[in-house]
Amino acid sequence: MKGIKRMKKYIYLVLTLCLLASCDEWSMQQIEKELKTTDLSITDARQFAYTMESSDYLKVSSNTTNIALALSLDEDSTAYKALQAIGKNKYFTEDASADMYVPAFMANKFPQLSTGAQCQVTYLLWEGKSVASDLFYSGTAYSLVKEDYKAIWGGRGAQYLTAGSEPRVPAFLVSKFPTATENKIILLTYEYVNAEPDTIYPDLPYECTIAQLLEAEETVEHQLRGVVGTVKSAIYGRFYLMQGEDSLYIYGLTDEDGGKVWKDKGIQVGDSILLKGKLSLDGTEPTFNEAVYISHTSNAPGAAARKGMRRLVAEPDTTTKSVPYIFKNGEWSVYTNDKYLAIEILPQEVYEGLRSTSVADPAKTINTYLKRKYPYALEKDEYLVVYMGSSLAGDVFTYDGTDFIMDDGFTDETMTFVMKKAWEADISTYLNEPFIGHGQGDFEIQNVLLTGSLSYVWAYSAQYGMKASAYYTTYNPSEAWLISPAIRLKKSKHPVLIFDQASKYAASFVDECFVMVSNAFTGDVTTTEWKQLAWNVDSLGNAIVPDGSSWTFQSSGNMSLEEYNEQTIRIAFKYTSSATAAATWEIQNLLVHELEVDGEEE
Image (cartoon, rainbow, N blue to C red):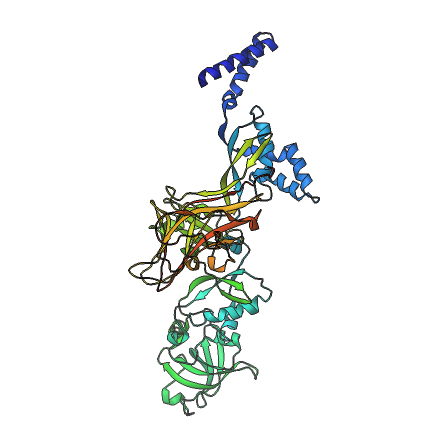
């Protein structure tokens, strides 16, 4: 029948065109052109899909109806500028949303469609990068310099950090960046030695080179190695200690008891010598006072001795280390985020391979790096990778089973538009996740506490939906969250949450299982401000929740979200257990939608 209808329309179009114009060669060409360019089948459609093309975004922004709408929304042209950005950037945003501006586009695109038509329009939406990404994109990269090492070491001259000195970094950052604002990120890069000075140089006090000592200008006791240079007085042990181009006057070398040591020890010019003492800058030249002999190597004169000396005083092997620090509540600490399997700082060898100090194509480069480092990654594993682009950057990469895909802040969103008196967006359904047959969907799991033999709490069950339990051979204290994707309530009036749930083995269900809501999700449940959503109650004031007597699923009833109208929220199911009780909680058929209110105009 559809084929017959289409044929009738073709014949009707041909006859109409023939009546409007004489059937000469020109008019026949026009008929053929019209037949080729007219999509006749669309007039049959009541439900169809359309994906916006690149050129469509410009049509949206230049639409006169949309321009008039945008100009009417505010006096400072903010909405108009956001509308024009759609055509330039070729995507929608929360400030210039599809539900506002696509209806006028649809009216121009499909003028032949009548009341009752429905179209699922897919378009590009800018959701923004993750909170973690935003922190790094607004962060700063900084590399320690000589004066910084000196400050961290408390005046000493080491040009590297160790595990023992790293705890001093937060205090250093407070003084280095006194105007830092809350959540400021610093990617700190420095040279690192995997040992402490007392293991690098086992003989205390702290050993350094002449150059480091002079730079530090310290008056505390140090050890120095060098080559015996010009001797001013062998009797009184006064000479110059040499290290390459550096020299230091040694005043009065003695043993630990204050005795003379020069002749007794057989010290000669060119010998390698180790001594300790304190730097003095009171005279005309830097002097090492109260010098005490420790040991020396004789019979190594001339260049050979100097070559050996350079080997003796060489700095220990270092590696370059980069660590992210965050400023929170007036203090600096190492940035961590349990949401991700790892926070990867892109290593120097990657830049060397690119022959660049920055990454021009992070999606490709970092995918290659992660595939090599994590060959056994699991699907949906997430990694936060920090790197240098045009500036400091941090992006989230998710493994899709083949590649690590960078979250660029965009998503392909589909919205239904309905032709009533005019085209309008159907925004009555905000989230529909049955779980059964859909797996975990776009929900994510974060474990705050796992004890005993627990390796997980929440898991997908093909039979029951999402299921949480902390009973594994015994009751295990736990805290685990099941978190929804972002839910944009757009122009909501009466949004509600409703789902089916079943539970057994709870000591007190309402004290162990909670529905939480946040409009400021940080990516980490422990740093997000949440509000508990109250359970519906019956006529006696009792919460309508599973009583634990059976596995029968029951509805939660409509749980109002009106407090969050026109906001973007996350809904989370928080499961807790103790050493004496661990419920099993099952959830399915979750829906967030607009509740129809009798008597209210559309």
